[in-house]
Image 1: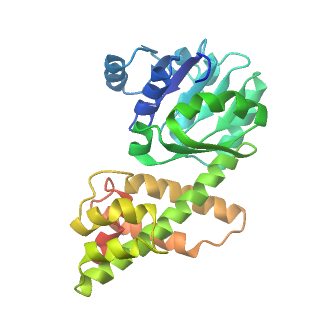
Image 2: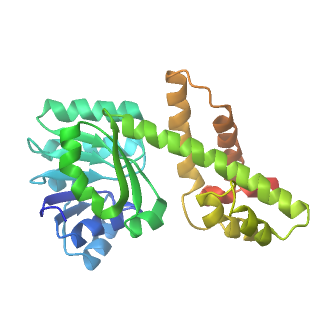
Image 3: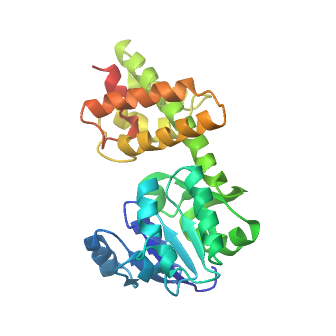
Length: 291
């Protein structure tokens, strides 16, 4: 375990809540902030930490400030301004962003922290709520080697894999690659299961046999059963996936990358939203094939 550190965590959503708890369980001193104060109250009832009334207060005196909020605008709202993290971040401190945001914002935050003698890592995560709760996240990091080496032993308490991918923004770009892969796999799985249903096959038996071969994937192992049952009230929401794919498609245009399948699946998710499925798990792509 890493040495005890003075930390803060901003954002106690479905991911941040358990991640902050893992930091406490690893023996660190943790101060939390959440824009909805009741979540911080609930977290404090379960964990030996303290709370702050503003992001600035959370950052004051912290060696490392973690944040995991919703999108670019949410990150900016807790970082900038008189009550923002930057206003309280002390010289030499590290700001780590676990939010999935644009690489442009990550580069902007790296420059902003550097101006006041601090450092920054963009560190988006993959693994969903279950990965956060079980301490089994995969974390893709952008930033300087020396800073990564300082922070990696701390974030290892909620990760199964942590890797430095390059300079600031590289973590976010890697997360975009991750989301491109997931979008394609889920659409393929949705079409495969739909075909099996329409052909009158035993879907469970089909999955059992093909999952032992080249078609196997995490999505097949963890989502095929609930897809067959039409159960989607859990997991990574379609609304969040569309946010991520929008970031990805914008980045693709900036680097002249062609992503026709990703753009198509993004529109399929828009269809799911139109059915009222914005909060459904991303595996709900199959529903548009059933209608």
